[in-house]
Image (tube, rainbow over the protein chains, first blue to last red):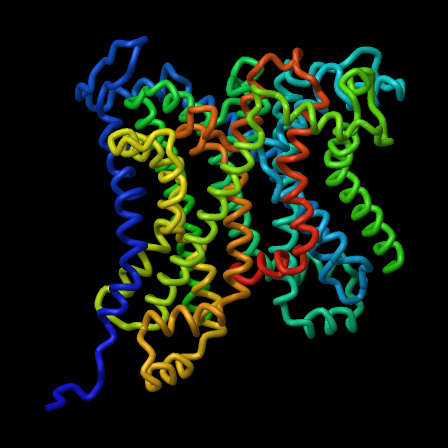
Length: 303
Length: 276
């Protein structure tokens, strides 16, 4: 009577994948498509009156690209990301090389790794509120600087573009350099140890080993780190939102794309929110495409 | 030469340690000081009013801290459990079975891993409004069943540590597929699951964007929303002792857990990462 020699397990594959695909479709895919759809409608609220939804084609896009200043917010986001990322990659590279170096034998490594990763786990909202209290006009930082005689009167950090952008970048730097260090270190430890030994035998200095061996072999990971960090940077929200009360002080120079999106979502201004979302999606999509190829390549290389 | 490099390395490391710990130390010190002392200036030594600030914060009717703590614990626990369990389920489906469309399904999940959740927030918010789930915890919890990043991490771990033979043996012994998964596969995945559960918990505990859009009643607020509320209220009128205490409660428990588990967490970060 036995027709099949083997039991077919393929229906189990579908069953095991079902929860993910059902939940993803309902709560992410349909909302994504509906976001795109909504971006073509005039749909907002003034007080209690609802305007729209009326189909207006690409007018929302015209609005956000010209009057509403999306290019400006994209620029703000990029500047603050760069201000945090450049020192981050420099410090992380240094630390990871030192941690991974078998010649240097840094002591207390696990202590240092624990400490530098710590800020990454901390609630961005609390971290940023903490920075706000630390850097407020009568806060501890000003009181330290005044008593050390470095300044005569308190610096009003949040009233100046450079200092408020700098503070946001500093927080992003502190929150992410530990994570980057550990990723890079894993990459360096993956490099064949005999390469370093051979180089040292030939009398190469640490600097030469760094620039001639580590950097070239680490480039794929560096690119990966840079692009994932950039994608993370585009999503910058909690830190500037809490620090500047959502206003992007001073004069919207710290307003990020997601803060702007949040503003429209909050006031139920769905048309413009949709157009902003699509813009963010497009920027991320291009970057993601690069990362996707990377991780797919490494996934199949592992197999 | 090496000696010089080592000295520089230690100096930089110690400097970075101080920089990273400095905000936390001030936070902890200031949570033990009274408002009047804090506003007078900075101190490196703790004072003795920790309990006083604690009591002041917990008795403030405008800051429902106990409710917020409970809400955050509830949401984070459920989120972490659901996301790791169902990500393991999904990863197992991809790893263990061969079926038509598997490759497409895998590529699809890898693709959506890169879509930032904020991008679909508008559609999500409208859906939640239509479903009448505003100010409800369900939209914060259920969607985490589909967590592509957790899926990818667990799948990577599965490839390295789940032999097909164990599952085959269970089948021969007559164990059903779901039972095999729950009783044999899950325990093998424990290290990966533990790490991802911690990250899931932390992520949800720290999440501000979505909860702030969905939650609006006082009793449903989570900790990050309380903090944001404190920032947007008239800051000058606030008791700074209370402010520092609220931040203390928001991040210090997590710091303690992290310090206890840091070894596993740091190993975990690199476990699923790309290799050059």
